[in-house]
Length: 132
Image 1 (spheres, one colour):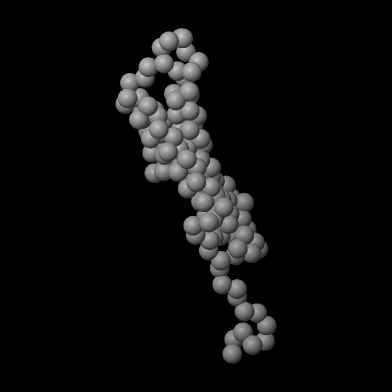
Image 2: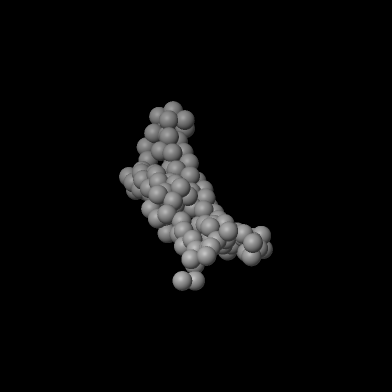
């Protein structure tokens, strides 16, 4: 059941990932200046927090995978002759494995901006024709 809950948490997000993202956003706010380009400001204020959320949720997904694999492989290394698991244990382990894999895929997609690209601020016009 633990791997299933961890996999579900990886998909839906956790309090821990939210706190880490808010901290990363604060660090980005403290590190930006008015002279930074708009793209750098957007990356520091929003992108870094987004990527931190993906990393933390990916960690939960990886933990779900590890727990599921340990539960599924455990009978092979246990007491000889006692390879019996209750059906619900294997079912939950497989569900945790599937949610862990799905959570890793979603986290990787978030981290590498596969689902939605980082917003790009419009480039301000400069020069003689800007005000005309």
